Length: 308
Image 1 (cartoon, helix red, strand yellow):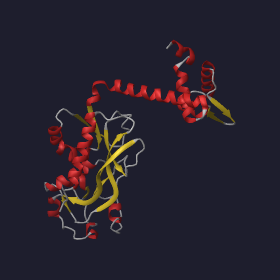
Image 2: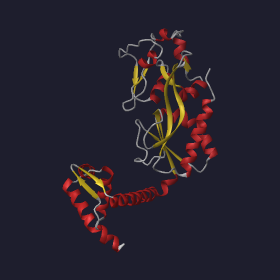
Image 3: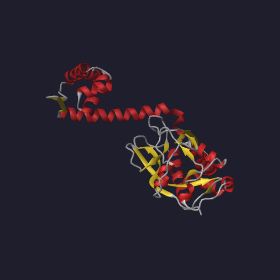
Image 4: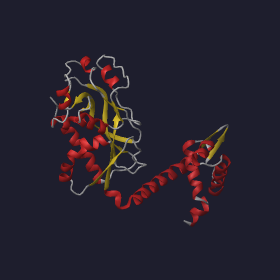
């Protein structure tokens, strides 16, 4: 360790070197580190003098690693990765056995909660925490095990498993349909009261998109009830406030209980899917892997049940 201190002088030089080697730019490294470009150049020069090897070739407005720099960068990067992994494990401490699932309020209430008894029966020792969010979060940065995202499964830094295709149909309460003439066609639905979802952070289909999928123009004049959380949309629909767009995987349990009813037999399959995601950079703990596998199996079982 004494020899390492003599050769490196300061651990800060290693951090500066890693950024420079990764970005191949002293200027961009200075921006990432929040220091001046001369300070970066000085740190690299001091490191090279201590080691006794040039680590970079200085070109016109560019730098590149020497052979020695390439070897040194490989070892420094690998060491930093091992240190980062150890630091994360120590930082999590006793919470490492907890499993955190980042989801929307609606998914928590109407998909996860009805299934929790089965999870606890199968894995009684698992400490599952539900983190309800209104926007997609960086799981690794937030120290979250698993999350749900809408898309096509191509998020850099994440593995994913599709758990539900996005299928939307018009739903309302039995009381609303008893008090209003039930439409026989998509065109007739235009005359009804709509409940709109207006999420502030995540793009979600609008009624305009739903009608457009059937070749019908929907003019939004600002009428109807407008809510920024899908759980509130569902509550309003069950309370008889109007017609809502029902995501099949979220509302099918409510339809089975006759709390909601499909207004029309037609639905819109958007081509998007809902995915369970987890970081590729942090290995899942055994309990988190069990929850992941359980959610995937529950999703497969749900896909086999089709509504009338």
